[in-house]
Image (cartoon, rainbow, N blue to C red; front, top):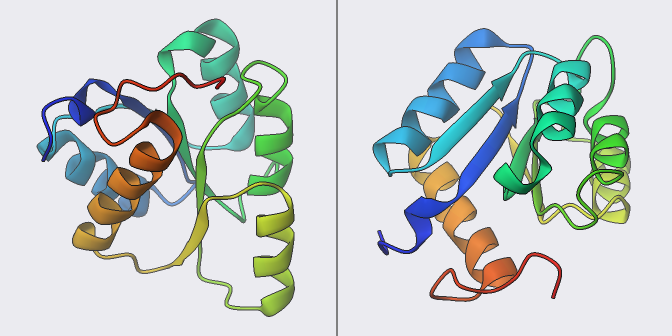
Length: 139
């Protein structure tokens, strides 16, 4: 992994504890700081408290309190541009369309392999922050 990339922190919101922890563990092994949330409201509170500390998010599409799209809509009140990956077990085209309309970088289907998470996060960060990780969030 590029050394510049691991200075980024990722919000990981998923009500499935096993999935959330697996994503966190994978990202931590790669040197990322993670901010776990078990629901949309918790994710919003994390970002509200420290918006500049979050560089990207991985959001489950189906959480008990808010959907991933509803959560992202609330998060961008605090961070005007938040690169986001949605994860879901739902493979419907309608959901994919809604996710992309909401501004998702991509949507990954559960179960998500650790390798795919790493590759996708690195692609997202490269796109939004530049290949060397020095770009600005709001550029």
